[in-house]
Image 1 (tube, rainbow, N blue to C red):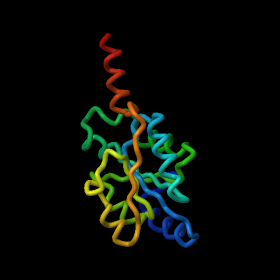
Image 2: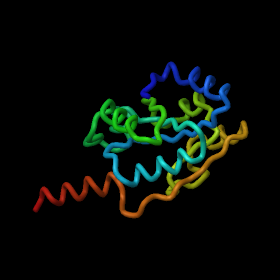
Image 3: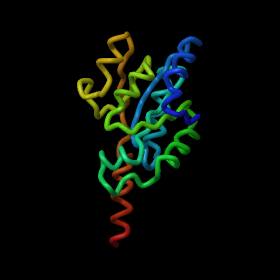
Amino acid sequence: MIVHREEISLLCEQLRNEGKRIVFTNGCFDIIHAGHVHYLTEAKKLGDVLIIGLNTDASVRRLKGNSRPINNEQDRAEVLNALKPVDYVVLFDEDTPLELIQQVRPDYLVKGADYQRQNIVGADFVESYGGRVATIEFVEGKSTTNIINRMKSSDEN
């Protein structure tokens, strides 16, 4: 389900009251590929509910440049929402997900294994109340950047 930012704190409080373990991850998820599906499937295994913090279009442009995102935020949210492991998608416009992580207060904060623990935004906060930080290995060769580069090289030939 795609939820509004204003609703996420109350939703997470209700989930915790039901005894649900909340897993949170975030990203741009611009062109969904098999690597994303693997990552989200593994993240979901850590708890009962998987919440995705999705960068807005403006946030993606600030992070990745004016040529991104390829797909707009509503399309990206709908695609993520349709994936089996995903329970909730919430958009955030900040450059980092820290404020959203503070609202969600997940039991698990998950990022890709390309992140070092000390570079994961929100890790200290999550661990301060007993939450855990986990990293998940990527599927080799699967990335949105690789897909975009392959498309560009096809256009040039």
